[in-house]
Image 1 (tube, rainbow, N blue to C red):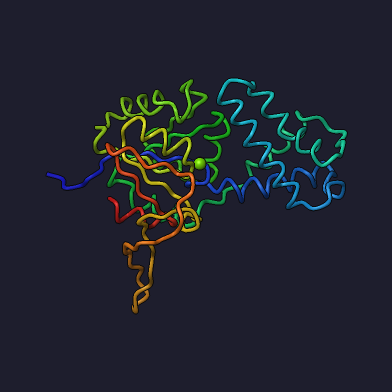
Image 2 (image 1 turned 90 degrees about the vertical axis):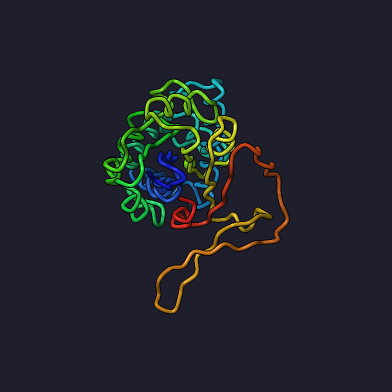
Length: 266
Ligand SMILES: [Mg+2]
């Protein structure tokens, strides 16, 4: 009999395994270069920050069905240019198409993701649950060479429902034949991955490299032993809590700052 606490692991994709922030930074930069817009925008770092805010804002509207897919894709660029007061003379559709093509060249994974998946593969049933567009999310997995680790991939657009709603978790659970008690959700987004899994009733790992700044809770840290091998140990931090709510008592929430800390939870 297996003594494993978990048998099925559900992973979010963007910024949990696939380094969305770095990859989109590079892709947007390449887009502006290719469309000869880079020298018009002033500071690229500032523009990227503004674009990211607009992207998040419009994604939220899309999730709540207040924007269509096409509106989200074009308006995020148009709104960013509007905010810096520049008319790019290129419409949102062209900007979006160029950006998508550039995204296909970006394959950076989150630190430790490849090693983690290598280790987990064959030991656990692995699946992805991601809010995103079907064609883009599959490309990310195949281009960055991690699709082979997952038995199934659940993409909100394909399933027709998104995190944090329970339906996508329910669908994934049934489809994987996964027992709720031994299924774990790993994700970087509190509002979608973690709150969604809490409401659905499965345990969660909240991955956030900046967590130490945010929480007053028990977390795990990685230390190096004398022989250079990594040791994982629990530690307790006393840092002022912010707006994070107390998790539901029915499920367990663990906070990690590096993916390899996941291993001590399994
Ligand atoms: Mg994410």
